[in-house]
Length: 309
Image 1 (cartoon, rainbow, N blue to C red):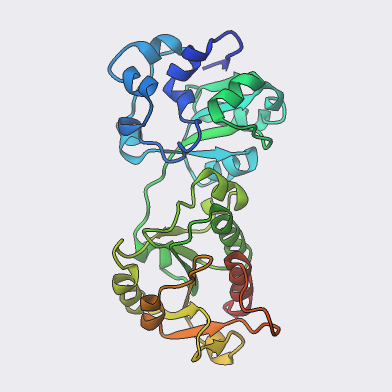
Image 2 (cartoon, one colour):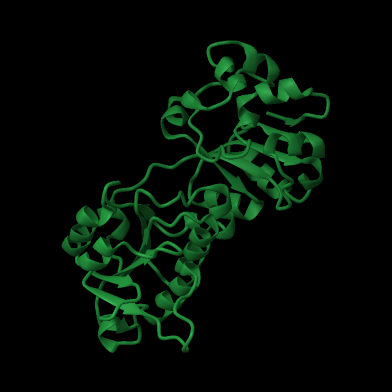
C-alpha cells in the first residue's frame, strides 16, 4: 500500500477511517468490536470505512479479540517490531516522514498492506488531541500475555508492581529493570497497562524487552499470587516502611537464589495484606527527615542493590 497523504481528506473522512481513529486520545487499548466512537461503530458492517480508505478494511478476528495499542516514536516501534509485534497502521505529521523513513521502510518491507497516513499539523492535532513531538505513531496488534510460569522460568530476580497507576513510573521501572538485570516483571490486575502509549515511551521500548505478564485476581492479588511465587521458588520481599523491616543491604537478601521484589503505588504504598503475606519487608536507608523515594527511583536502587551476583 502506498503512503496515504491526508491533506485533501476532509475531517469527516479522516474520522471515519478506523485505521486512523485508533490514534484518538485514550484509545491505547483498542478492541474494534466495542470501540467507543460513532464513526467507527457505524463503519462496521457498512461500506463507510472502506469507501474512505485506499482499500477495504479487513477486521481481523485476531485484532477484534486481542485489541491494539499505540507505540509512539520510532525507537519504541522498532523495539516492538524486534519483539515480533505486528503493526496495523502508521500515522504521523508530514514533517516526520523523512526522519521516520527507516521505520516506514521496515514496516512496508514486512507487510506492504499496512497503511501509512501522512497528515497536516491540524489534522494530526484534531485526531490525537495534542501535538506529539516524538515522531510516528504506530497502531500495533496487542501480543498475547504469556503464562506466569513461562515468564519466570529461569529467572533469579523479578519485580512485582502492585496497583501502580502512574504511566511514567511504570515506564521508568521497566527501563530500570532492563538496565539492571531484572529477569521479568509481573503486574497485578489493577496495575495500569505497560503498553499504554506513555508508559511504553518512557520505558524507551523496554516493555518489549523485559518479559512480563499479570499475576493474581482483581479482588486480592496477593492471596493467590504470593503463594504462587512461593511455589515457583521465590522469596518475596515487600519494599515498604515498617518497624520490623530489614535494610536493603542485608547480606542475607543478596544470598537468596530467587527474589521477587514487590513494589507499591505512590502515596498508599503496598497493601497491608500484601506486606503480611510476603516473607520479609525491606527498607532503603535514608537521611533523617526523608522517609521515602518515588517508586521508580526506589525500584532502581532495589534492582541494583539486590541484583543476582
